[in-house]
Length: 168
Image (cartoon, rainbow, N blue to C red; front, top):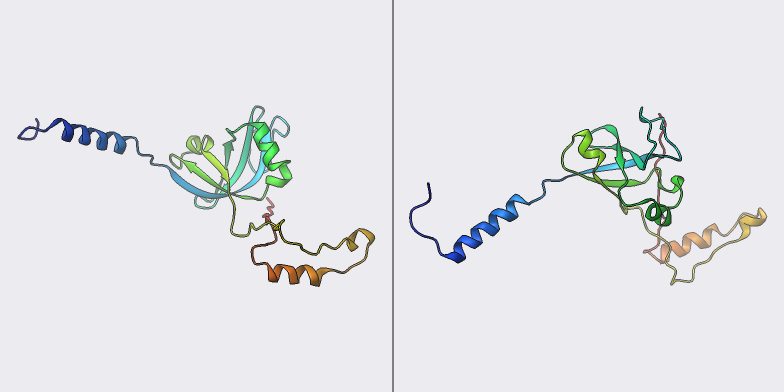
């Protein structure tokens, strides 16, 4: 049964556009996690997850909100992963954001994983002339005070990435 009265063509189109956009709206959920292992053909098993992965690349991620460990398939390609992030040791321990349709294991398996920039991620400013001590190569200690003084004067610099360590 339709509503009483007639609708103009414009009103009908506006209602259908609003309905279509509401129908296509994403109901994704966001989770915070930490990468604790990377599995694939090069490393098929993980001590944190009881399954072997022989094809593709899977991130073993501890999701804070769900208090569990999940595998997540890396969909963006091996070459991008290695050229941007490097070896596995550079990725393990980094915080990430997971976009999934629901908290179901299958939805999280094929969720979007983004290795995000945390609050502690401030890299050295290459435009500033900072003091770099090479005394450590010769076994001589020194230069720490100058480095700390440069960090104090330039507030945009930081310690870089801070990784989390895990033990099972």
